[in-house]
Amino acid sequence: MADNPQSTLTFQGRCPDCAERRVALPPLLPLPGDDFDWLVRDFDSFRRLMLEELAARYPERTRWTPGDLEVVLVEAFAAVLDQLSDMADRVAREGYLETARRPESVRRLLSLIGYDAAIAAGLEDDPPGDPDGKTRQRKLEELWRRNPHLLEPARREGSRAIHTQRRMVTVNDYSIRLADHPLVLRACGWSAWTGSWPTIRVATILWNDHALDEEGLPYPDDLKERVEAFHREHRLCEPVWEPRPPTMRTLLRPLLEAWRMAGQEVVLEDAEPVGIKMFISIRVWENYFQSEVRNAVLQALGTAPGGFFAPGRLDFGQDLYASDVFQTLMSLDGVENVCLNRFKRFGDQYPDRTDTGHIPLEGLEIAVCDNDPSRPERGYINLTLNGGRRG
Image (cartoon, rainbow, N blue to C red; front, side, top):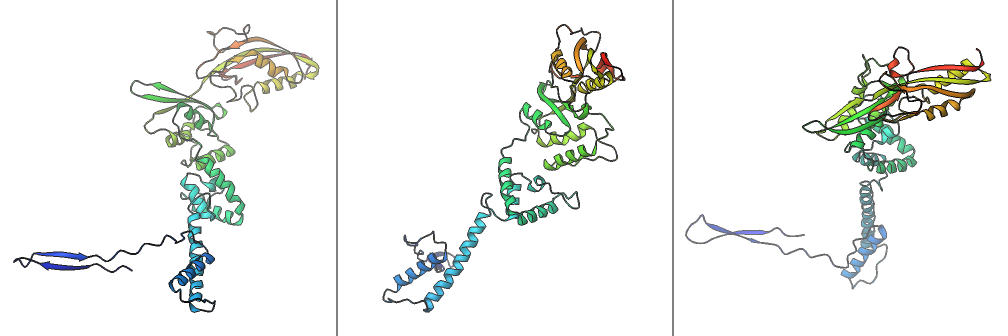
């Protein structure tokens, strides 16, 4: 051990208050020898290292037995050093995601890179609404203790998650990130100059073709669950369904605020629906009832899932072709022949496009045909059936 430095005061001259402090520094500690092995980590290596040091210090002693007190102490020290070395290795391994083995260590390391393994595993808080998610975290750690094989998939998924771009930087990012929301079927973004700064504008096609600011929407329970799960996964504020259902703009705004660029103005807009007016005549096979064929045609060209005009099936500015309508109808059972008598946009100012079989659309326009008599501006179908059986 190094000695403490010794200081002395030396008075010179006639002034009794003027003195000089002189410090005598202790000699430097000897450096470790070049033969010291810093990779010694286990009992045998520690024991051999200390026994070699004893033999070097006492060369006159030529015999060492396991019963000697020095050897007993060396082995006791080696055992303790082996335990401490193992503990140091374990602690060091817990600091890296690739080598960590304790469930709490893996969970914390994954949370550092923004991956919530508890939410990914489908675990929930009990009671719900815990802002810190401590109950969910305890459930995850207990699940991993009982099933250690689940650690590896979580470790891999968490590492991949950091390469997934979720921030809204480019115009295309706004379209992609918004389209991930359960309420959004399609999204299209573009940049517009407002005179002072550029503004990102995003048009959306929403669930059941509803508008952004439509109030009093009857959200089904399964859709509510998917929206809540999406908000929990992305750490967004939980939607409030009572006492009055929120508008879709209210539900989408937290996603924009969380992932948009700071200082970037973003405006959500509805798509521009273009009602399609069609007069169709169909020849029915003689063995089919007209009522069955009529129902099949209206379903095939309807807005239900799988229908030709289902919300989100057609993209922004996607032209409408009569050939696609023919293909859809001719694939139905009981349809012998199809004749398209009128094919145009709703409104007297638009010409009939039956001859060309092509209705051009552009920009944010979306072809719609709800076939609702109370809203003819959203398109309708005049269907005439010939042949077949009555009933």
